[in-house]
Length: 575
Ligand SMILES: [Zn+2]
Image 1 (cartoon, protein in one colour):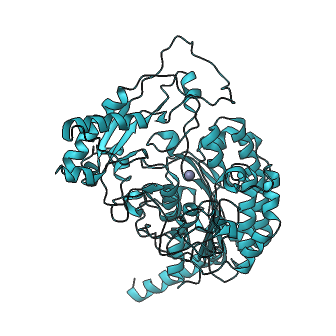
Image 2: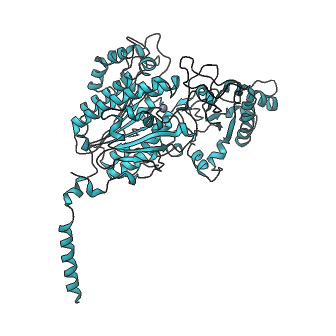
Image 3: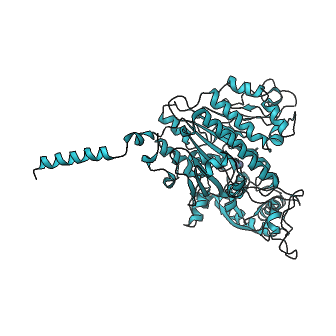
């Protein structure tokens, strides 16, 4: 056949095939530009909770994700430092602490101060905005005599990676707008990012929303109106705490705080006219109540179920509101959490688990005593900085340096002494919560109390130099490191053991064990193929999946995977 004739026939065939293909309109319907992306983070919410209570969910709260969305049942953080600030930073950045720079809620920062730990978001160059008179700290003009001593502003100063929100803003030359909302400053600031238009959190005493001069000089009129309106009194009333000056503690730990936050988010979306500018806007709402309550009563109390079912109702209301305002076809939603939680040690111990609480004040005394014995007899030096913040144990490098002990030797010595000090504590029954009897009392009572035990200790130098096992465990540990100049060791105590003392105790999250790392991950929106997915995934996948769908760059340090198994083939997405 003559070549030109062959080309003609091929073109004709292509033309015919084009007409036979599904309507191109459907292909173009998916433009990757929803009006709004909403990421709902529940503070301290273990991945198994949704399964435990799924038969009790009603309406379009959790069920919007579980039945109509893509629900990943096996989502685990891949690091050891399962806390609020690193978790929220990870959700926004798709990176771990080695990428985003946030390893804990607060830390000893050698470059900033040895007087106290610095919080993950504290930034003395800024101030809090429009605080109520009663809450103005002593370092600001107009403060009352009884004011808290010194409260500084906040910013994403320590966040070393961009977020999904930052990438949306970069891709639209700032047209996309990005906001964070929470009761806690770190949970509002870190997932939103460096370029966020604003992050809002509350003044703990009054419950009024505030922000930092990093974002603005004064609250916008709508936020000031929210603060002066009836909503605070309503939340206090629902929480049986009318007129309280401890809003964070007394209202914050009840279901009333969730609807309070979601109402503020609605007010933000409405008043800032989000989703109406031809670009994709982003709001991250971090719901703090479950964490404030959960530390106290644990994951298995009746209060936990009340919180979950109350939140189901609030999310039904919020999702319905989004549907009415934008049509849910125009919104992408994600649901996740910043970390899980351990059961109350006594509850787990009564089932025969080797759970317990470890008195770290006593451990510190023993380690300091031994180090004084070896290096500074009769001097009573404090070689460890106060306040064990597991998994990190901070050394006071100034004390070691004065004795000419280099970092390597100092950390190795503490790493050697710690397990011995923990093991030498008297075994005692695991603490329980007095008012909440665990439902099951077995095995039989002749078992002896579990001994406190450190399973692993790693030095900062080992972790920074990558001297770790070439395994998944080694990778997990390497993800947990950010460097702020001070010396420390990472202590991993046995699963279901935690820092604590006394007979009655709450619980905590801080470890590389599964219960602290397991969180929900679920999506709803036009691109997602509804279903229940049991592939093991990680919270770092959230930001990159949305970035991919929106057609923008992945956040700068992200290591997540695009969850392609949960995406619809493009042509099936209807306009
Ligand atoms: Zn948290």
